[in-house]
Length: 100
Picture 1: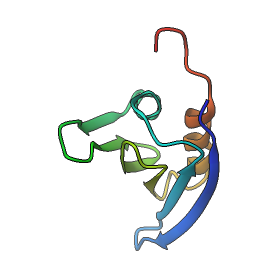
Picture 2 (picture 1 turned 90 degrees about the vertical axis):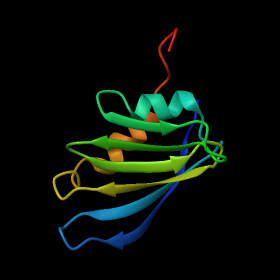
Picture 3 (picture 1 turned 30 degrees about the vertical axis):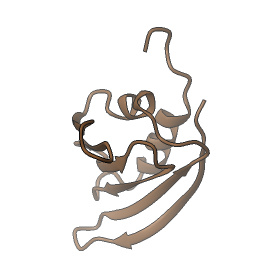
Picture 4 (picture 1 turned 60 degrees about the vertical axis):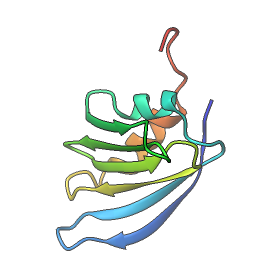
């Protein structure tokens, strides 16, 4: 199981949102990416030299990263401020369901 070991505040946005960087205890893999993308819009480019993903979740914001890295960024919307960090952390740290 993957764990969040640090969440760093990177910047504030003009619209009231903010950017945070999540650091994991292991490199990000497809299983975690797909858990983060449940019920969201996923753009995944596995054939890039460094496999890039972008996930847009309407109530939370935009998650971006590269598979194999242990950190990724989340730009939270103003409405996602209240539950955003907990939402992302819970999706990363929950155990995957059999067959997922």
